[in-house]
Length: 210
Ligand SMILES: O=C(CO)[C@H](O)[C@H](O)COP(=O)(O)O
Image 1 (cartoon, rainbow, N blue to C red):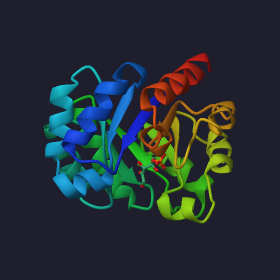
Image 2: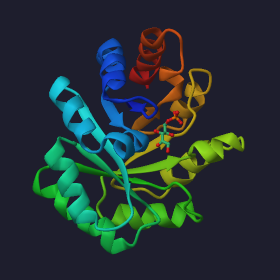
Image 3: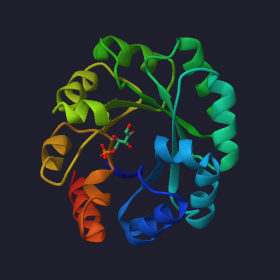
Image 4: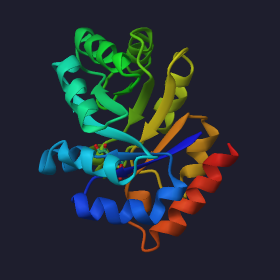
């Protein structure tokens, strides 16, 4: 089981600062959607150049033009690129084809998908690398999480790896780990802590045992 640090509410300098603190405890660093909106793919390039040993995920949440947008993210240094599960199959297919050319990976984010189980099975069959359940900030504000959704997709995803994101904290991590995802994505649960290094270290210790 791997740990991904999601960076959302910082600029490039702030992202570098946090990653410098916790790099030894994370497997993947995510350049979150708000950073890409604010700074563009330069943020992906800057983090990949500064931390070449880390796997970099560009959270573009692609909805259309899958092949083209994946191409641009990969050119900037992304190892994994996100595509929305609510996209058309052709968008996901295009993204997968483009990523495969350079041995990169596609993570499909099932945020706001209504029939999670059915869509997870469909995107799995499209050859994506990760299927991710996700309660976004707006759902988190309504007290929702994706723990039950993770159980649901685990029963239908046969070839892709599974991932979970959305409001995961140290206190809820054991419940997440028990459901057995391949990738646990944590943003505020690390970046919002006063001791980010200690939080990342403890999370890494827990996911490594799984
Ligand atoms: O993609 C995102 C929001 O759309 C976040 O990166 C993801 O939810 C993880 O952050 P947090 O742990 O703070 O919820």
